[in-house]
Length: 348
Ligand code: UD2
Image 1 (cartoon, rainbow, N blue to C red):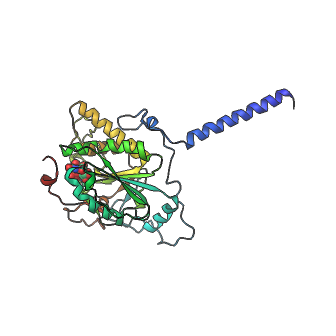
Image 2 (cartoon, helix red, strand yellow):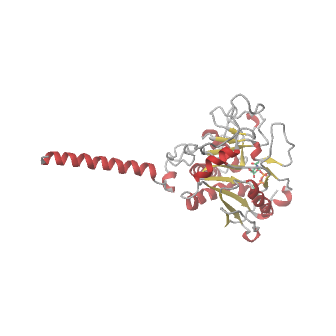
Image 3 (tube, rainbow, N blue to C red):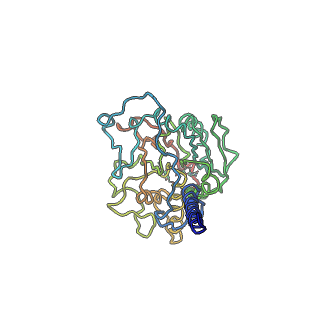
C-alpha cells in the first residue's frame, strides 16, 4: 500500500470510529435534569426524546402455562381501549401471573410518593400496611413519605426489597397549598434521587387504602387513573379549569376523561416532564392571581389531554369508600377513606 492509500484507509477508520462514538453517546447516556428542562412548552410537548424504555419487549418465560387469551370473549360492559389506542385496565382485562412473569426478570424498581401534612399523618398506617399487602408485592418498592411531622410516621414492617424514606416538608395553612405544591416536590425528588436508579413512579393520596392487587398491569410510560366521580359525566360539565386565562384551561367540547390528582404515574422521565410542566404552569397562573379550580389536578388534566396517557387505569384504581359499588366495578383496588374534612384539613 502506498502512503496515499494508507492515509485514506486510516481516514475512513477514524470517521467510522467517530460515528460509533456519537451513536453510543446519543443512545446510552442518562439525560441530565437541565437537558430535560430545555424547550419545555406549556404542555411539556417539546421535551427531548427519551430513549430509556424499561418495558423493552415483553419477553415471556419459556413454556409458561396460562389461560388461553381470546379476542371474542372478555369484558363486555366496559371499554378497554381509548380512541388513541391506549389500554384501559379493568379487572378481567389482564392476566396478573403472565404480567408478573414478564416483568420479574427485568428487576424493575418502583417508587411511590405520598404526602401526609398536618392531621393527614393519621392515614399513614393503613396506607402503608395495605400497600405491603397489595402494591407491587414481590417487586422492589421505595416509598417516599413527605410530612411536616416525621415523628408521627408509623413503623411498618416491610418485606425484603421494600423500603421507606421520610422527607420533611413545611406545614401548610391551607389544604389548597398542599395540593398545589406536591408536583414541584416530586419533580425535585426525581431530579435529585430517582432518575438514575428508578424505573417507575406512582404518586398517591394518603387518605386511601389498598384492598386488592395494584401491580405490573399498571406499568407504562404515562399512566392516568380515571376519576371515580366523573366517568359517566358529560365532558362539558367536568370540573376542568374553565377560565381561558389559566394554563389549565380546557374549553367546552374539549378533553377526554377526568383524571385523578390522587393517583398517577409512569416512567420516571415521563412523570418528571409532567410534574415540571404542571408546577411551572401553576406558578405562571399564580403570577396572574389565578388558582386553578382543583389546583394540580386541573393542571394534570390539561397536561394529560395534550400528552395522552399511554395507559389508563379504570376507577378500580382509585375508588371512594362513600360511593356504592357500580356493576362495572368488579373489584376495588385502592379507595379513598371516608373522612370529616372540617376536622382534618387546616382550613375549611
Ligand atoms: C380530591 C382528589 C385529590 C385532590 C383533592 C384536591 C381524587 C380521587 N381525589 O381528594 O386527588 O385533587 O381532591 O385537594 O383524585 N393532604 C395533606 N394534608 C392536608 C390536606 C391534604 O397531607 O391537610 C394531602 C394528602 O396526601 C391527601 C391529598 O393531599 O391524600 C389530597 O387531600 P384531600 O383531602 O384534598 O383529598 P380528597 O380526598 O378530597
